[in-house]
Amino acid sequence: MNIADAQKAVDTWIQHHGVRYFDELTNMAQLTEEVGEVARIIARRYGEQSEKETDKAKDLGEELADVIFVVLCLANQTGIDLQAAFDNKMALKTKRDHNRHHNNPKLKS
Image (tube, rainbow, N blue to C red; front, side, top):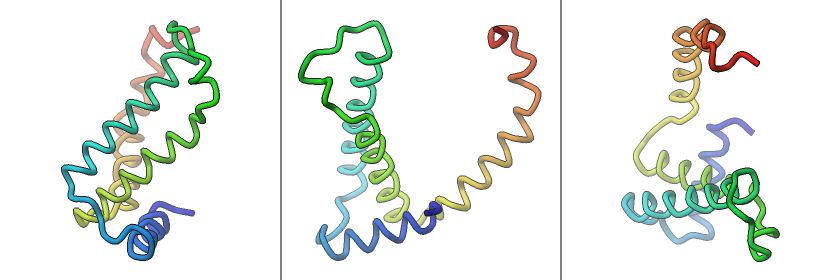
């Protein structure tokens, strides 16, 4: 599924199951909450914090999917074609950063 199809799928889901979109500020707060859940898993599973027993069952993929869902909601309700925006961003990063990271001595093994 490409990003445009994902935006359509989220919009269809909202229409059939979600009544309506939450307002943009609520979705922004929800996005922050979901990113925090991802950060908690990363910090405890891959970072130096100790992972609690209650956190071990948390699914990182599910939490990342929650982030994507809310981002798609925000794109839909603000009229953003996220596929076009992402394609443009990839082209920009490819042109701008092609040699930059290869020349970064901090990334050499």
